[in-house]
Every structure is written in structure tokens, then in C-alpha cells.
Length: 365
Image (cartoon, rainbow, N blue to C red; front, side, top):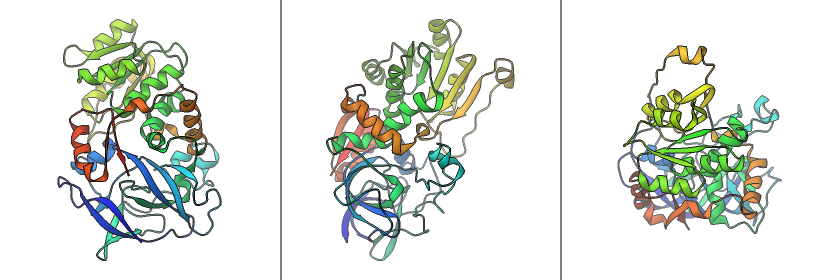
């Protein structure tokens, strides 16, 4: 079938809306008609060349929601017409990590960048292969993906809002409640208050962390942070965040979260920790970045530096849980959406994201 997508031909070049040929779903695959997709920093890193090694041309997008259009052989958990949130972490359900509740670390990974499980793409333009960004590639009117990446949700959940659960909400909130398992009354410092960071903050409010300290260099983003539950804000352009956090907490933060791709910030998040504190790395710096720190602080203070992938999401359980929290009025998602764009506005959306003008941009089909 024919469908429209926003196509990236090479880093640094504007995306172009194009008509693509889309092959239907194969064994254990699903085709989804997209309703909305969030505009993520991970995609921006591919567009601006910060992350390298991606085949082109490519359809970006890893955060979206839509309606099942067609299912391939062997699919039993969804049917045409079902509402789904897209996951960018396929899960086989049978490997060690899947059966021990860590499906986000599934051992059956994609065989390569830009392709699905069988090593091929479902998209072409004038006979040329077009590659998938992750399994979802949501900057398209339709998308074919592994069936495990289409998570069914209740039909009364607005799909525009549900789209953001697929990445920013799950990653941010999950980093607090799943990965770090923050306890009530624990202190948190959140470095970077974009879409992920704001969800880290509201994850802290869900578990009653205190204080929740937001750190950024953009005053507008710090104002957003307050509305999502930050008890204190630090403008890192005007004061040393490490010293300020220690002044506020007395001994340092129990948990720090790095929600921005900057190696220097990782050092700040490490240095602000109390003894036995945990620093969680969510945002990734450019390809090849390295960080160094005094190993004495690791051993003598029993600090922990750990990665956080997708908020340690158990998507089949966590996505519906996020939906219930939203519908119960306990999770803010509408407030994340600063601007809406159509597919032709993808470049404008990336410009706004790069300039720090949005908490989250949303492409609506």
C-alpha cells in the first residue's frame, strides 16, 4: 500500500514528506495506523548527526499511538480496530530477561539498525529500501512493527495523549518507580527538564520524594519543572548545581537523574550525591563520549552509577498502568504537549526541540 512519511535522507538535511510503498505485516507483525507521535531527542540526535551509524534513508519516530489496521499470521493479542501504544523495545517473552520481568533487556534484539526481526525493511521508495528507526518508525501515516511492540490499551484513553506514554512518560516515570525504586522522603536531583526530565520529576511526586530539585540552564524549562512537582529549581548558568544541591539537602542527593545528553552534566550528577547515593544515566551524549570520575568516591562512599533503559519498562504491565494513572488524574500528560504539528511540520518540530522551546512537541496525523 501507499503511505506518507517524513523521510531523513542524511544527517543535517531537512526531512522531506514522501509517498512510500509499505509492505503488509509478516509473521508475528502488526500494521498500525498512526494517530500521533511525540518528537524525541533521540530522533534529533540522528537528524543532527550526534548519533552515528544509522542507514539512510530512514523514517524516524519511536513514541506513538494508533489503531491496529492489519495483523500478520500468529498474532493473537490484538485485532484490527484495537487501540495501541507503540513500544520501541520488542520482547520475545521467552528469554532469561523476559521471564524474569526485565523484558526491556530482551536478548532477542533487532539483527541490525534499520530493519525488523527478519533482517529486512517493510518500506521502499521508487524501489529503494527505506529503513526503520527502531521497530516503530512512527513519523509515518502507517507503520509495520513486531507484534510485541503494539501494546493494547483501553479505548477511552485519548490516543494523542497516549502517544507520549510510549517513550518520554515511561522512561521518566519508570526511572523513578522501576529502575531506582525511590522511597518516600528520599531526595532527588533531576538534571535536564525536557520531556524526559519532567516525567522524572512527576515520577518523584508519585512516590512522594522530597526534595525534588530540578537543574537546567533554561529558565522556561525550570518553570515547567515547578508545575510538574519540582520543589526547588537551580539555574546552572547562575550557580554551581553541585554546591546548591548539597546546601539544599545537607549531605547531597539520595538520587540524581541525568535526563540530558551531556557528559559534563553526568559528572555534576555524580558529584552531588550523598554517600550510598545513586546516579541514573537516562540521556545519552553524542556517540563516543566518555566520562571520568574519582574512583575513591565510588568505593569509599558506596555510590552507584547505573544506566536506565526505557525506565526498566515492563510494557505490557506498565503502559496500561500509566493509562490508569492518567485517567485517575494522578499523571500529567496533556500538560507536556507544548505544540502540535502536522507531518509536514517535522523540521519545525525539531527546531523547536533543539531551541528548548517545547516540553514536548506532538505530530498529529
